[in-house]
Image (tube, rainbow, N blue to C red):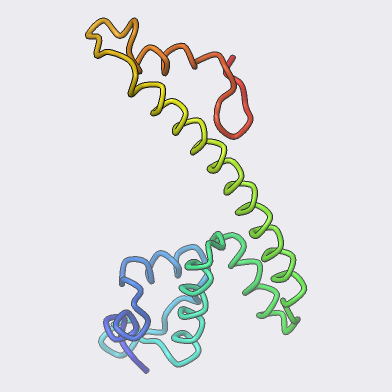
Length: 145
């Protein structure tokens, strides 16, 4: 059994975050020692390490809760995790495409802006080009109203 400070040290998760995870149900409420301090066992250490690793992979707390709930029911969560992984990969691929498009737009704007004069009124400088862009297609494929 370890106290919250040692749990934090072993996992790299702050004490405040550990308490929050208990509050939202990702971690079971800590057992209490005779002195009323929170104490945790190796199961808590492993669970917290899993949560930290899943967060590092950009899983949401809700997704992590679903995975852990499945495991807590003694059901294998692997199929659900595979679906989540594919969804995350698809989302990242989409974001990469959007960022590449944004990069191209910024590069074109930069190259054009290098040829324009500085203008405090922002009517003939690169700032004007940014202002005129409003109303055109926004990054990520949406249009402004």
